[in-house]
Amino acid sequence: ELGVVVLDCPDPRALAGFYAGVLGGTVEGEGDWVDLKTPAGPSLAFQAAPGFVPPKWPAADASQQFHLDLTVQDLDAAEKEVLALGAKPLDTEDRSRTFRVYADPAGHPFCLCAC
Image (cartoon, rainbow, N blue to C red; front, side, top):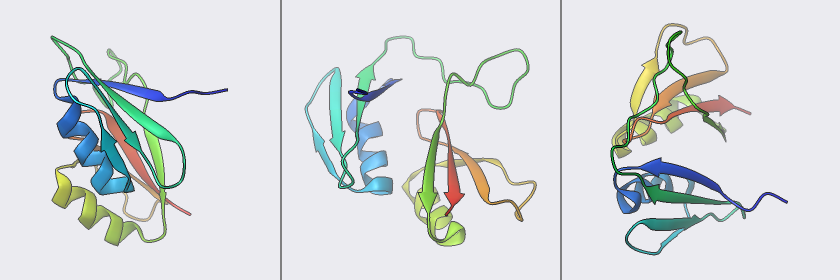
């Protein structure tokens, strides 16, 4: 049974707040470990990582480590929301695809995917 997905980052509370803005839910905890309890059930956790280096995407010589796929009803509306929350677009080449790639404020890649 999967317990929780944990993201390393420089500021757990700030990154949990970003994902709470994207997914909804409640941010719980302070300090080096913060949880995001989402309305759909799964949780995300955020752990302080001194010396954190963001993943690179795309980079043949470096790993993106992993990424989250977030399913949305409307790509354009969801894009506006994540950009307003501080996401950065990583791939704006092909707007006809059913997904778009962004980085969260700590640099982790994630995709918005049309359902």
